[in-house]
Length: 243
Image 1 (cartoon, rainbow, N blue to C red):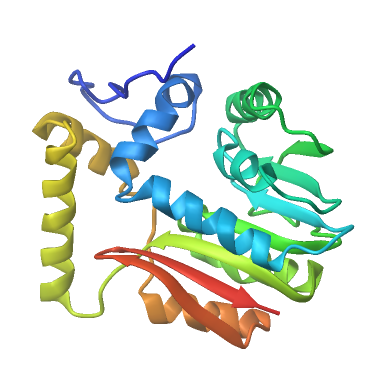
Image 2: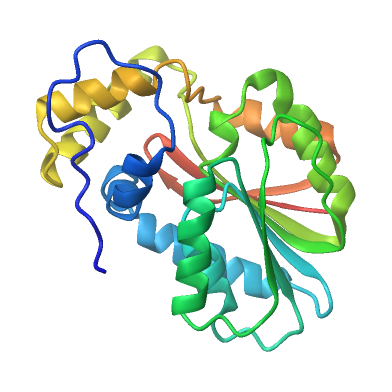
């Protein structure tokens, strides 16, 4: 089956509830994320490229918030090391879609998928690469430090965390400008005003972005000292943090 077009917020919904990764969202997720995150395909390509640079033989690659498995599928391609893939997501429908994608894309190495709420303790073991791609922003700020510490503790020396987040600018004027440009982008890829406004309202209490320097400080507090930006588009950023 081909990619389902994202029309989740196409019709008026009346009183909107908070955004959740339910079956309706999962069906359209690949189109939704591709059209909602500028340069999403390139971010995924860069993430896989970086993962290949840091992965070590006999270790694990974790994708926390693995969604439909796009990143794990890409990382598996051309990887000549003995590596186990581990996908974690809080949405059971996402994990089922992920399983199907990994099987259908011919992933030829062991993989495990876990349904877990990342706000609860989750143990990372024998990891050389951990992905948090547009995931940490959905975690309540209270729980972010403990998750990053668990990642740091579970990484092998020289291993890397690849973090991609929506971010805020420290300057209010620039922040408004970047958000305006972002909504202009969404119009260019086909979303109408109702879709933009309804999704914004649904995400308001669910997606809590930090400023870039706040993310860097969280990474340092977890133990990471080598931290670099590998991607930036207005209010989207990618960080690589090395243990």
